[in-house]
Image 1: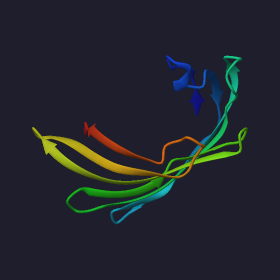
Image 2: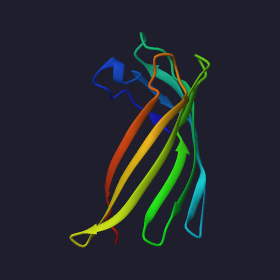
Image 3: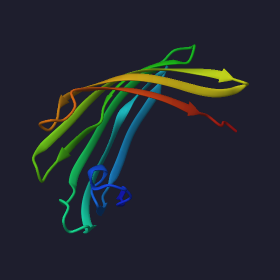
Length: 137
């Protein structure tokens, strides 16, 4: 995993360059997909006036896809900041549907996010909407 300082405003990024290991465990069977994605990033360069990055990301997930290509998913996108001893734990509940528009597959997704843990002043909930264009062979 790599971290590059690409934000256009200090409030939107870390201003740091970093790297660290990433791993994925995944299993798919009978419509179910489950596993965990994990990584850790340490900063080693960048703006001197911004805090260092020392963070672990954990994303356990489980989803079920029906025969009509509707997918129900729950996951977290949890981050632990080792320097500040702070967890951020959003829990995501999502539903998506795969459709064909003009003969091309498109997936629409909507989801709700609840923050089970987070920094003081952080959000308590959120909504997510996504459209994914698919280009199979």
